[in-house]
Length: 149
Length: 149
DNA sequence: ATAGCTGAGTCTGTTTTTCGAACGCAAGCG
DNA sequence: CGCTTGCGTTCGAAAAACAGACTCAGCTAT
Image (cartoon, rainbow over all chains, first blue to last red; front, side):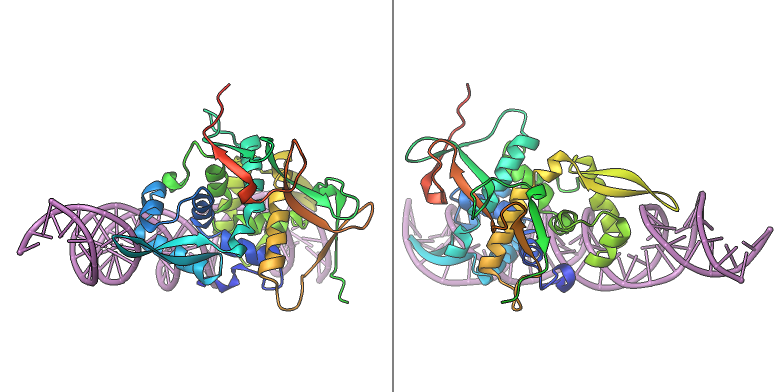
């Protein structure tokens, strides 16, 4: 990676943020979660330069977030799909979406809706306590030195 | 903003991702959530160049994520604090942390722990259905054209 | 009173990234 | 055989990030 110093190698948020906080990466992931898989489609829908797209896709494959899978359309080509690690980013994307729709809503309403397949309900990201189940804000949480057992 | 094309102005994820996906912005926010508030402290703990730090802070103030508050230490200076909009990013940060600690764990363990102040339990970000309360993954969710009522 | 310190920036010249647009290439198609 | 398609690579130009010196105003120790 170019800017080695970007991430405090000890901090989890920092390391993730350094990967996802590169220009285009979050946008790229949004597209993947919406179903885009092919180079050409990323390039045209996001209007990203081809060289940077190549680079970002390679980084994400490298990090194990995407994998390059062969498909056949006339001849064999490759497309990009989420790995399990990639799919695990779903809460991040949903949290981002919730925040955006509440705090920076687009003038003409959202460009798509999300619903629970089974019951049709709305989808929401939240932070909760695994013990008592209460929903938490930053103020309910204490930061401590790590407990090294 | 320099690269106007970065964000599809209709898509909520896209708009949020364009703001948070700028280099340093996520890292900066991590610091803020950990309690950093002053220019000098951001600069030394993150090792970011002063000019870019100035720019990013201004952007975040501009977007209403941070606010610039006077404080007195010998003479009047300013520090940066989260607004309500900024605090609302907590689920994003927690989702990021959860993902990072599961999928890109630092070799020597996390650099801090988080616990629910009241009961001491662990903190976790999740996606759920507001109707039935079920925890959801990408596969449980359907993307549809927006319902314009 | 004066020289030095501090915190929050600004300025400048250099290095990295990103950009747009053209080019490469290998199959399949008409 | 030349055209199209999909996935890249290459290249010079433009934008962003970089390190580090400089500014500025008021406080503080001499």
